[in-house]
Image (cartoon, rainbow over all chains, first blue to last red):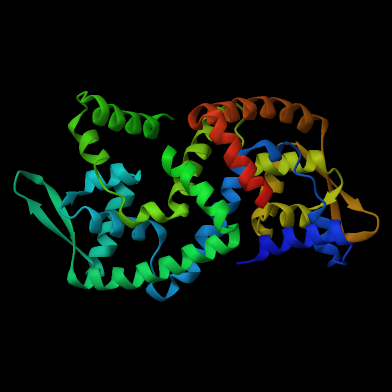
Amino acid sequence: MKQRRSVGSAAKANGRRGRPARPEKRGSAKLNLGQLDRHLGYFLRRLQIWVFQDFIETLRPMKVRTAQYSVLLIIEANPGRSQAAIGERLGIERARLARLLHELERRKWIARRANGSDARSHSLYLTTDGEMALAKIKSLAERHERQLMCHLGAKRHKQLIDALREFG
Amino acid sequence: MKQRRSVGSAAKANGRRGRPARPEKRGSAKLNLGQLDRHLGYFLRRLQIWVFQDFIETLRPMKVRTAQYSVLLIIEANPGRSQAAIGERLGIERARLARLLHELERRKWIARRANGSDARSHSLYLTTDGEMALAKIKSLAERHERQLMCHLGAKRHKQLIDALREFG
């Protein structure tokens, strides 16, 4: 998970102290970003890839993907809500969310109950198995977040999450 | 491109001034993020999706994807470098970069020339057609970046790019 950091560090060490680096690394570190350097999207994407790779790696024991984790947390925090409300809140497209919920039901982590007021709509809940699984998942996800904090530095982590949370 | 912004605005307007909103919107805006609220990755991903959608939409006249644009800018800023150096700098996996370069060659935007010092390696350049295409692409990409700046606010845009650029 440290490739980018080490490339960056190698480049800095190289520039500042003339410490030798492997030729490929030194060669690539020298490449100029050109106008890419002005695009926030480029930097967002690079960090987001790091985050997702670290998440998948850290959460491997529970075999859970980021979108599944988000849905479990939203159901935990808002029991009894509909698929439509969850999809809208997380910005997950309808068919994709249906597949994702089906997979969580297959693992017996969530249950749907018919909604009294609207026969077409179902309310979503965590099962007892789901609650136990989510407790383990959350503890691994906290480890992931601490790793991200180390990767960025605690100050930058806070600055980024504050700026984005206030916005999002 | 304004869905998230308008959902947020509706929720705010709703909370602050009690202005009526459509029931689904109001219902979904109320959902609590739970522990998701502590994960930088969640907020990064939401913004990154907005950025990519806006990029694709704004750049539609030139039919160019974000990774193709990044590669064109890197070749422009570093003419004559190898595929390996570009892949390393951008963090693009070898096979994927090969497909991407093949597509750019097919459009006659880039050319490979054998590298005198290493017969296995090729140097990459923009063609004249590539330079002309990139001029149009850059002007659309600037429009995209201005849209992103409006979406986030200029201050937050600067704050985010400074924090991430310094890091990345």
